Image 1: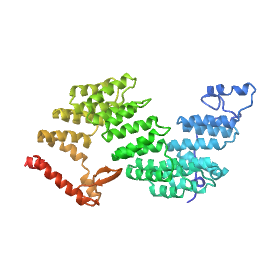
Image 2: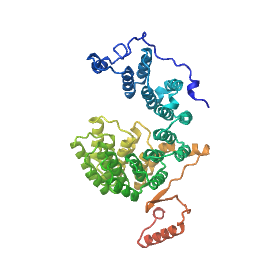
Image 3: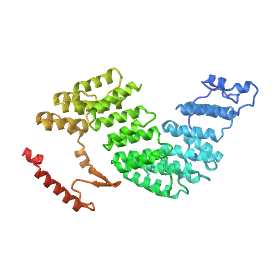
Image 4: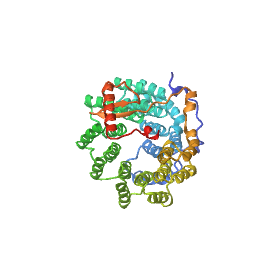
Length: 487
């Protein structure tokens, strides 16, 4: 495969003004002329003149950072017409702009590659080569990224990490691992690219396995690594490893990092240890809205409705304005505590005072609020009037209430929504099978997964024997299975 630089077709560039004679960006070359008036005083005062390439590159950089890629390209064209030669920083700036806005910079990025290819900078300059790899990786063109990577005369750790990260973000796990194994020297960023990539793909066990490999390699994790590992612990419920991570963090320079503290609060809340989450929150020297939201939601989902609402009010007294997540926590707390009127008041304030458009999770909270209070018709009215289709969670709240109250007729009215949601027939027709759900249990930081009816576990015989014993003891205590009661 040849590099795209040689196959690039001419691009229709924006219409340009007449040829510019000045070598500096000025009022005639830039829509923001006041900026250059303020920053060109040294030229008028007789001090050493600033390199025009630096001034033009600064102008281009400002537009790239603000997302004005078309204006940045226009400035680059004016720069060339003024006879000013770009340097490697100019190219890196433009390539980075194309990488951050791939939809806008796809065509120009290829043409820019042709330019730097002609100058040989894609091979000889590690910064330009790495910027090209990043641009192609972020636009999903991994084959071109790898060609640039392979053609570079010199690579640094950032070059390798950029290519690995590109593979992981685009789902090419095998290629990422192969390249990682070829890497001459791995740093924390290299390991984090793999660990974070697995977390984003929801492959949490693999993420933790690679974190263990990182520990054995002797490379110290940075705060980004820790955040990724905490996220994996939260999703898997591995409290043991989460506690170890917390102790590890307390010995590091980044122990007061707000993002890490927020992640720990979320992890402890999802593992059911709300007291530990509260300790982390109380020890934070500074807090953000995310910190407060994590505690509010954590209290709510763990059945501490009163504390959730207290924190919701304290947050506002501290000067934080509640967002949609804050209201989700408050509505969940009201639902679990049976505070129907207060929950409806929160819902109204969210829309009327805070101008927050309700999302499906907010409507789901109101449906659950009514369902738990036995007001099933009101719950159904919410489902029928909400601006979006209900999902399984919303319908599940009302169906559970119908089952508890024995309201068969209302459950039958919900069937039309369930039929719309049920993908079973289509999936069967396509030969697709659903991935079975599973439960997981953590023992000594090891995860044990179980599927319904699964007997493949190495200790399956002992597990089922214990379950039979528990079932027998429950019957001795008077427990009667629900299906027998219905019969």
